[in-house]
Length: 179
Figure 1 (cartoon, rainbow, N blue to C red):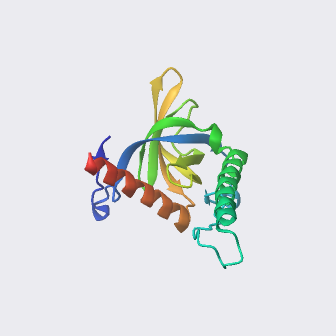
Figure 2 (cartoon, one colour):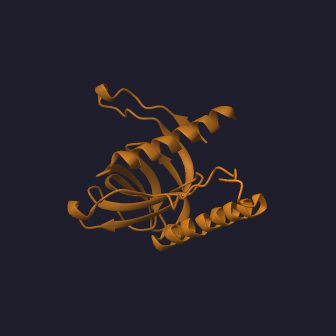
Figure 3 (cartoon, one colour):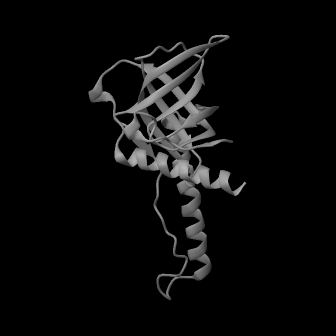
């Protein structure tokens, strides 16, 4: 893994930290329609019962712990079903270089500068976190065998999605620095 820091934005160069990673990713070309392009976070269902203390003395402690355990398992199932229904579980692992402003990866579909791609990324977190966002192709190079190295600039991204990507990048950078 390689850690890259951004350069000064005022000088016209990249202004964000970038990190190499392997992430489940789906990319597909879409037509340009800004009204339909809304970035989103799919974080599953977070019905949290973190306190395992019995709410009052009339409830059996063993029963309460069992109910909390059942609730946690149901949360995991619901999270998985939501990610599956949105297509995130079909994503294949891809080597990426990601920053809060864009992503570079290899895809099997021809892409050209100016194309708009819908990107679904499954970030490694607990609970699993799916990101749906869009990007404009700023560079696409054929690397042979029908594969293309594509660099995107994220577009139409809301603050929640950007924050989740930043958190992921910082977490990966900390992991790299520890090694």
